[in-house]
Image (tube, rainbow, N blue to C red):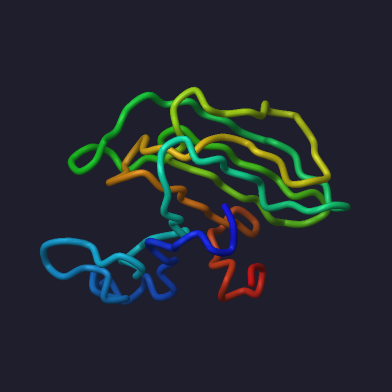
Length: 156
């Protein structure tokens, strides 16, 4: 992913409102590209299946793979809301973790326990789990609570 990768859905900054139209992402029939929707806990980046996905860490900070899950299937629109194939990376010396979800089945390129002090390709974009099309669901967690990386100044 790069800074020019289009964002197809944003983090819902006001989930307490309870309205699916919180960020005008729902018209009553479909989702509006580039908006948030009620309860969305990440940022969705648009692309095509097989596009490379890179981790968000930079030298000299260390990151460690803490969880991987390989799932072959899609549950949208009537199945359980799940990440599908996904990875969780812990960023050492901080309370942050990053989640990379809806990845292509069998595309994970890291293993639990691996540590890195640079950004690396961890997988490929896909459409697994509760997903309506090819994209990366990127989530930042602080103390295991999802936060908006843009609102919290973690991303430009």
